[in-house]
Image (cartoon, rainbow, N blue to C red; front, side, top):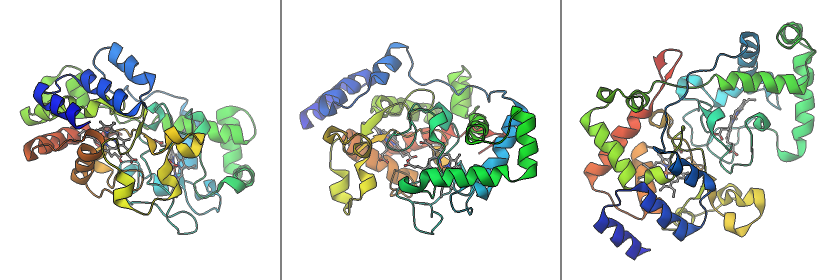
Length: 334
Ligand code: HEC
Ligand code: HEC
């Protein structure tokens, strides 16, 4: 692997595809999505505009999203952890659940999540529709928790009237989930400066930011963070070139990643590559919330995912580039 890197240093790794091939050889975990993204030209694409969905359904979904009755224990709304004024997350390494204890993993942003092709850190939800999760319900009481939630919402005359109007039917689990999903599909953050650049306005990035984008490609970050969400379209091992978990210590169940879904030893430590959209406003980072700053996260990526040490200048340029990925929500920058 060291030789591969030497080779890379000599040849400059100008083409991300070159690194992609190397990573396949090194880890055998790349999904076909990579080949696809490669074959359709530039792998990064701008966010689509916020879709115009049924306003009554969106409105209901927004109300549910902010309603604590949507949690198993009646205490936390979706918005308590997924705060739209904090990049769609909550700024904590691991959010407290209903019992006050930290959840097993860091809270990812809800912004643009509808465009991730798998959901959750371990990718266990295949579709956005399938994921609606009640944060404080453990696996054994999930179904009862849902029954209780549906009952609470159905008991509220205002919701009954709202669902009759928006869906023409009584409240049940399906329409509650549909309203939530519909609302979350509107949580897109288009018009970041980088997207404006991708659409052809090259003046929207400074020279340093453009160089940062170049470094992001040359070092091979783009081999994993790619597609419309600059991430969110494949699973990758965390710790390709060094053992992240041995170095960090105290490995817990959530650290096993995809293995917890499939039971396949080859899936140990595989995680969904997170989206880098709005990454400058969603610290702390990683599934365990262990990186407090963007700089710490980028350092770890160089060490564990690329096996390289960048110059300070290159690292600073990449961080400047990442800061151009902050989009707009309801007309204002996040
Ligand atoms: C107590 C904090 C908390 C609450 C409340 C909460 N979430 Fe989450 N949410 C999380 C955590 C933590 C994850 C990651 C779980 C995992 O990967 O195993 C997550 C994951 C998600 C994801 C997947 C994002 C991705 O990129 O994988 C979506 C979408 C989401 N939540 C929406 C919601 C909705 C809708 C509600 C309300 C019904 C809600 N959340 C309530 C903490 C919370
Ligand atoms: C081999 C694939 C791969 C490469 C190459 C890679 N990353 Fe990552 N990146 C990941 C994975 C997987 C995670 C999630 C790790 C975890 O939390 O378990 C991640 C997480 C991140 C995060 C934290 C995001 C968050 O919301 O928690 C940042 C920032 C990041 N990467 C930036 C970069 C940069 C910059 C580069 C290039 C220097 C890079 N990555 C190269 C796979 C990769």
